[in-house]
Image (cartoon, rainbow, N blue to C red):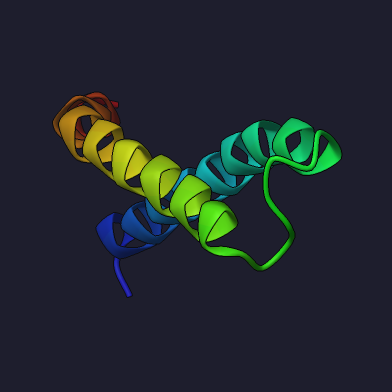
Length: 72
């Protein structure tokens, strides 16, 4: 594998961590206040929505990331 491949894997991995962290930060208070239960449709919706938003941001930022990496 080339450097570009490893950087792509690292970029996606970072965004998965960001998505999971943000989703969990949003999810915890909703679970604690019994707005929905673990494993419910509400929890699926929370993580799906944060995943979609995270994906959009990651796609928008990817060209900037690649440009900076290639300039080094």
